[in-house]
Length: 127
Image (cartoon, rainbow, N blue to C red; front, top):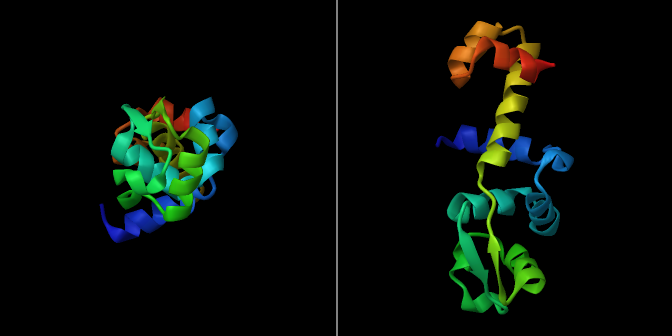
């Protein structure tokens, strides 16, 4: 993934509508923030993950900021969680990219090709 794409993804993550996310993902976003949540999902999404009580006793310190890890351990420490898939966030970022490109005048057929979706689906996202 290019650095430009990472910056773009980060800017859209900061604008994500948390209300449209599944409950556990919404909780994670509010607890550790959008960027650390995205990184956490990237590494552990779709898996069951044990959360250590003590942040120094986990390999996750290489995945997220110290502040986010402390919050995660304080909230879920000593338990296992089913980590949601990253796709929930990716979908919202993709949809925002589609809406922005559409507002710039890019046609539905070009957007459908670019994002590998049907023209009808692009139209539904644009609504």
